[in-house]
Amino acid sequence: MKKTFLMIIFLFSLFTVKAQSQNDTISNPFEKKNDVKLNLYFTTLGLFEATYERNINRKSSMGITGLYVFSKKNDEDTNFLISPFYRRYFGKKYASGFFVEGFGTFGSTDGKQLTDMNGNITLNEGPDVLDLSLGLSFGCKWITKSRIIFEVLVGMGGNLFNADKTDHDVINRRAISVGYRF
Image (tube, rainbow, N blue to C red; front, top):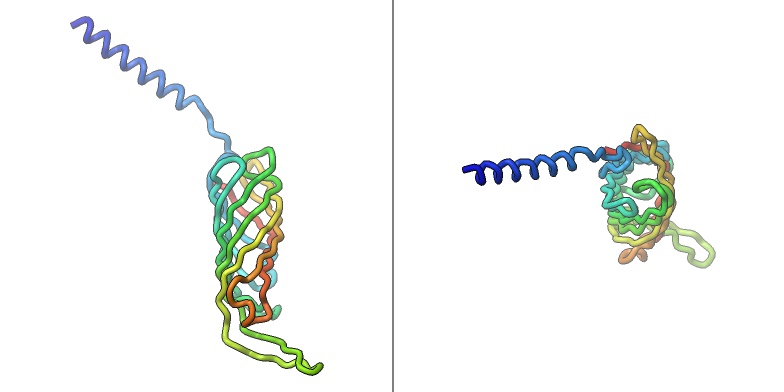
């Protein structure tokens, strides 16, 4: 009976020690896994771009960006874009600092084509064009102690399949974003 009682106390003490060691570690508030951002630059141009980013570890993340044009006041030729991406960070803090990004895009642009025939420029108005593109971006992300995010990004990609049906065969990525890490 004493051996059984001592064995139960020994096992209970092992579980207690393990539980204490797990609870003693305090997580770093910078090491949260989720970022949401709004592109303020595009908002001023009549576009809405939001980004969700999932931090895989301190040096890499994956995410998706969605862009929708809600105002044609600046003669924007894009209708919508959906861009998944992978980032590699080179900063000292968790998932922040300078980064390089590879992205793919599925999007819709207008089917306008300007054709120069014998010195004359004509306009061919075709249907909207759906296409896929691949590209690279680079930028920098800063995060405050209150987990507010500031980000600057520039990049470029090329359409893969329907570039001949529109004059818009290049995808430009630009962002001045503000967000929150949770």
